[in-house]
Image (cartoon, rainbow, N blue to C red; front, top):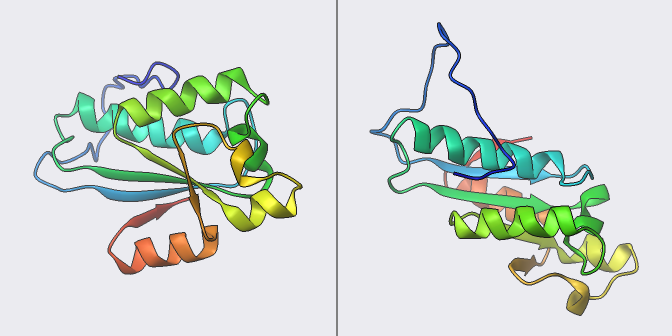
Length: 137
């Protein structure tokens, strides 16, 4: 269970995750926060899949760009770093747009451990959708 992304059992709620599905999801993390809201979405998705017995074969990727980039830079946010650690421990890939990193004046070596440096968010988001991933914004 990812601690920062709690889920609740809501009586009468419909459309729970299906244990028979293989979930392939890419979460666009373009807005900052501590941690960014997109990290919360990825974590909640994982927790919902776990709660409903649907974790088998899940593939979740969180792609960071825009104002969320500083959250993956060393020394910027202990809260975001803890979130990244929890996401990685759950098997969630966290990737960052190299174009946004450089555009915002950071260097690739400034990125915290556990974050993959991708050529661009645009190409990662497009490629994963072509490969069958559902996009969550």
